[in-house]
Length: 242
Ligand SMILES: [Zn+2]
Image (spheres, rainbow, N blue to C red):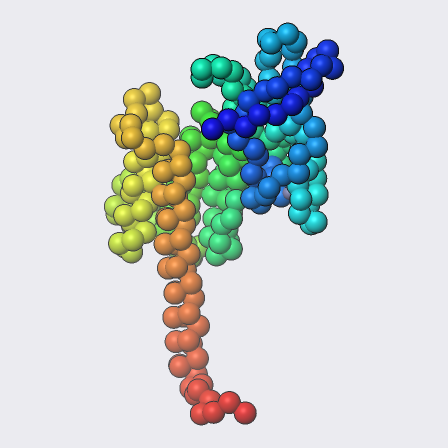
């Protein structure tokens, strides 16, 4: 149901317009909000309006920034202005576990750039970026620890990502998620889309599932190594807390 708002047009006249929704997310602190509305404007005059803009303020004390919600008109019975985006859109770094950033700084750098491209509205070019980040993630994970001999490193560097996953990843969850992410990632770089019912969000979810599986494996390996070492040197657990 559209909401009715009195806006100022280019002649400083007041006009009644319909909008589909109010902004509910701050583009600066990236938190869901009920935006404070400060002013409303339409561009154009005499019923020919090209856009509607709502000046808003984030109500959070920690943020409190002012932003502009942008709307475009669409004919649905009458003219309704549909919410498109809010500006300025401040880049927010993606959340990737530290363990994964540590074994693959290249993955984190490429993934962050793809994420930034997507946040800037470059939806067509961020897909290949996500696909590239996946390749670095998988290969760096396989090559971790860095002590692997050079012959093995050369072989892993040269073979395609899909073969790499099948030949070198043992953990079944990591293997399954990396495999699915690769299939969807390839769709982002090819002319023909094989998985027509899947999109960029599915690819990102699968990359995150791969990241989580790798993070779990690295964390488990860390505990196993750490506590086996303690056992070897004869450390005994305390019988009671003092
Ligand atoms: Zn905010």
